[in-house]
Amino acid sequence: MAFKVKFWGVRGSIACPSPRHIGFGGNTSCVEVSAGGERIIFDAGTGIRNLGHWMLKKGAKRATLMLSHTHWDHINGFPFFTPAFMPDNEFKIMAGHVQEEGGVRKVLSGQMAQPFFPVPLEAMRGAMHFEDFSAGDTFKLGENVTVRTAPLNHPNGATGYRIEHRGKAMCYITDTEHVPGAPDQNILGLIEGADLVIYDSTYTEEEFPEKVGWGHSTWEEGVRLCQAANVRMLAIFHHDPTHEDGFMEELELTARRKWPGAIVARENMRINLL
Image 1 (cartoon, rainbow, N blue to C red):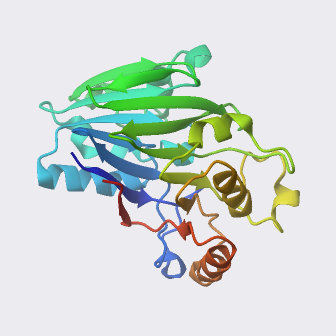
Image 2: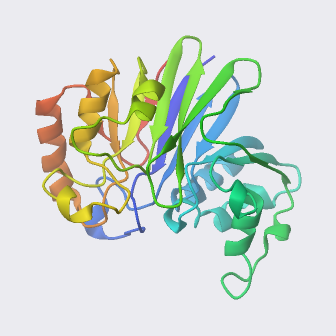
């Protein structure tokens, strides 16, 4: 079976729908993975709205949504995910960091409660299964997909994911902050030998010192981690809203010169691993 990755939202912090963000995209985090007959959705930023429209068009009725964390830019597309309102559809929604806050269902319901949003979670008539786990757990999806997880360094917590299928592996590592000179061992262990790592590259190293404590990393650290862990390809991801197309084009050239395995994620980009 195929092992495919598609980017529906690549921006961090806040959506930026402007003419200066056309080339790389302005929607916030949402990545779709198809592997072993399973459809896995990473995060429910504004990019999930377009993914939902595509699923309706294709008649896709089932998926597992895995949240890195529940800051707004990673969940504020969820109320606009049309397939969840269809009674014949079924979704599992998972998170590894909010058990102490009452669980992922409570968190998602909270953002859809009045006066924040006029349509409650209960209006989603699809079969919704909410499942909390602890970052660091390993589990299966179906018979052929293994999911490994690890905690990330981010305010209020976050979870990194590794999807394994038929000898191939991809990792979704956002949002996380590195400590300069001290590679994150949780991340290194999770991404070892992966074919693709999608990594939080919000800042450049020049920008990073003023952003310490904000919970994000740099593309340069992503390159170092991937080289150390024998990763085949790095997807630079979670672009800062201030990084407009011209900036991102220069960043891509610089990153490719530093390591040919680096690419910059764009909306609607597809990567086939099998």
